[in-house]
Length: 107
Length: 121
Image (tube, rainbow over all chains, first blue to last red; front, top):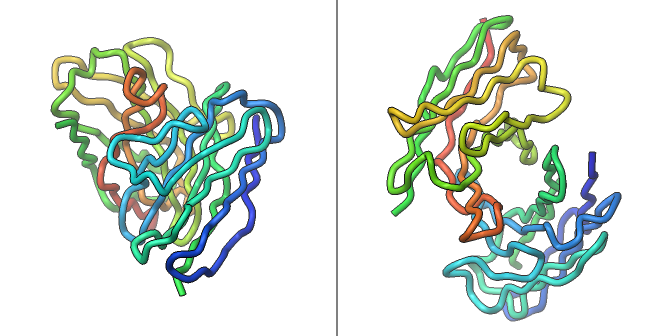
């Protein structure tokens, strides 16, 4: 089973700042990795799939990079609505697994 | 527009069976997509339960495999989850989701709103 470790656990940034979130896999998942945003009381929202492809309707300030075991989600200029918990998910092999999440707080 | 909607009991007794259904609209359940279940215990992270593609054998989380059944009902355009021998540890919000093979390389692009299931006597 692939273990995904996200860092940091939480970060607090001001609007306009850049956010950098990390997801590290215990073994290579190639580019079979996605990023999700979840706000309280809501279902997760797909942001990035295939490590670097923005999902439909996702603003250009969100970008993903990486392959193998190290991945990054960047938010170039934080907007107030970008608060929430961000999860990575791999689908390189079964079972799929999620990272434990990174909580983003907007100051 | 693709929509998914979970339904089922919100309260299940310990040692009982949790049975949920996900009604799919806007796309055929026969289409080339993954149909999945994900859960989230209160205040905690997301946990993948399992998925099924067409009517192939489903795949599930190894620690749940002996208790989980995922199946498709083509006639009703829906899929379901059964989890047996539940305990309080199975209390969670249960989500159904579609893994869009063409739209999102199999990743979950459409989700239901979630259903809180509490295991308690």
